[in-house]
Length: 290
Image (cartoon, rainbow, N blue to C red; front, side):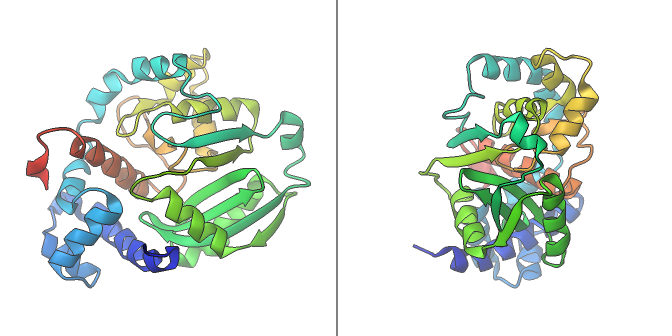
């Protein structure tokens, strides 16, 4: 079995490949072009991309246009409501993710993280350099950026909990990324949500959106029985500290537009494309896409 550090180099290459394909998908780049961009042979690139991203480069490119988003949105509200009513946003097994939630109390949140010790570190992932933050109760932060953005990424997270004590531990990050992006997740990942009660409700609603699916800020507001709170929902989505695992990338504008994303719209497009391609990959009669 490869170690997290061995995988890190491969994930860095795949992050570069995803960036290359996402920036050029309208030109439909050939396999050879993408392979050359990351310094691999087409055969090795195809095998590595499929193993680490979960779908073939061709399938990924095919889903980058996200033309199916509007059709998904037509039933997004009902799907989300059904998921929430089924208890999928509860404290145990959530949707298709093995997660366990523990939220900070409102009183503790008001202290700005005072008394908390947060370990943070950096590791490469399929979506670029990742910053990982964790308390003794679980993962409390996950974000993405570029190698030269470490300082800004840390500052962004520290602004959320300014009174906490921070210590660097890249091993924590490498281990977490290895578990998060494992092809088959076998361990339950504890999450420590640090936010206001309303933010936590929004983040739990995001967890109920099926992988490969989409919803709107308005639909989330509706399911929280606050139909006029679209802006507040949008703000809470934007404050989600645990990207990817809490899938704020699955929330779109009412028209199906990607709108903004805290870690970059291009990265949001890539995340949605990966999930949509994986969903279709797991559906019968998709071999033609490979």
